[in-house]
Amino acid sequence: MAATSLRRRTRQLPAMLAAFFVCFVFAIPFLWMILTSLKLPSELFTSPVQVFPRSGVYWEAYTRIWTAGQFGRYFWNSTLVASIATGASVALSVFAAIGFARYKLRGGNYLLLGVLLSQLFPLVLLVPPFYAVMRELRILDTHLALVIAYTSFSLPFSIWMLTGYFRSIPAELEESAMIDGATRLGAQLRVILPLAGPGIAATVIYSFILAWNEFLFATTFISSPELRTLPIGLQSFIGQYSTDWNLLMAGAVVTTVPVIVLFVFLQRYLVAGLTAGAVKG
Image 1 (cartoon, rainbow, N blue to C red):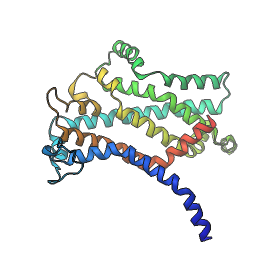
Image 2 (cartoon, rainbow, N blue to C red):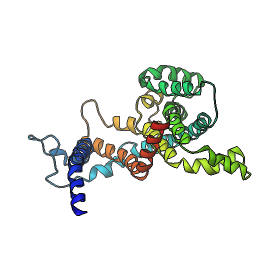
Image 3 (spheres, helix red, strand yellow):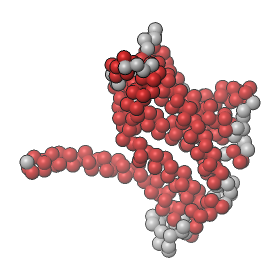
Image 4 (cartoon, rainbow, N blue to C red):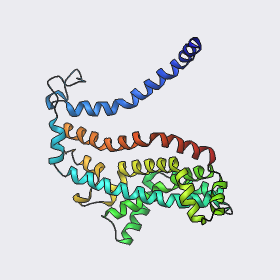
């Protein structure tokens, strides 16, 4: 038994080393941001390159970032816009996905494929029509414009992913609930939605990350400094003639933390949700 376990671990060793190497490569930019934010300003551009702080840890960047400029307001703006856009995207995609998964629509599969293909357009091509619509609605320079843009952009992939997940849930469960007296809507809310938790969690992660990190729509639609979100706020730390790299890197680290926390809590659902969407969609 022990010999079999040892042989299995030996066969898995190359894959584990490869996975560790890939994770390390992807983690290098984030580690570099942390180390740069903790160096003294005099250690940032030494030659040869200095990886770790040598003269002490420079924690001041993490305190200055909340007092210099309006970083706290940017953080609140991003939290507000990303949360509302995520909630709207999840709610709309759940109802649309239930329709695709539970009702026989003429040409439904082609319509679903068309929804997904709309996600393939480059984001920069969508900015002019979105800008024209927002201008006609007179909601430019408001958070509502960002919420609408982020929701509409995340909907196609969310619908496709959730449709696959709802199709993986047996329809007999819903029918059994209806035989017991529940309405169709009640059966879907009380039986189907709880079972679709992993798919919904994956949609939450995808929609939130997309809205949290988006820059192009935010810099096009928002002109008032007090309405800026974090990606635009980080850009404001870059001056024309000089850049406070400690402040910029500390801001980038603080901006990344909420996404990492959300991913850590929901990552096991993300894998299950994406897998179901890929297989059944």
